[in-house]
Image 1 (cartoon, rainbow, N blue to C red):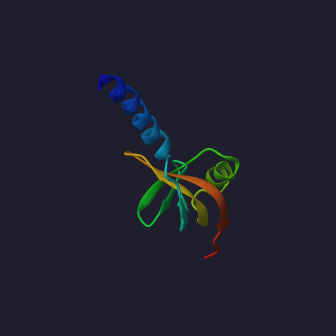
Image 2 (cartoon, helix red, strand yellow; image 1 turned 90 degrees about the vertical axis):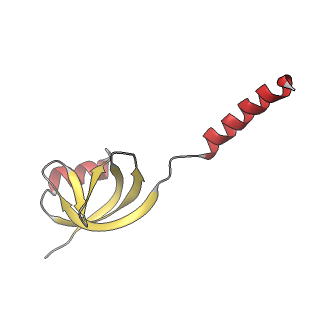
Length: 91
């Protein structure tokens, strides 16, 4: 029985690790970029993941109202958005 249980345990562990990829959800939010280079919408703070579009957003559009489309993933401490596109909203 012991010979069978060790390989079975290894296989089950590998399946669990491979079957649980980091979940990313597409979202669209309207908000502003604060002075800390975070995106704020609906009283939620999103850390902006480093990529070309996200860097453009946080470096050039501080305190402007923007509509952001991106992939959201959450950790225990933060909500992180990988910005795919954004547009400035004229008020």
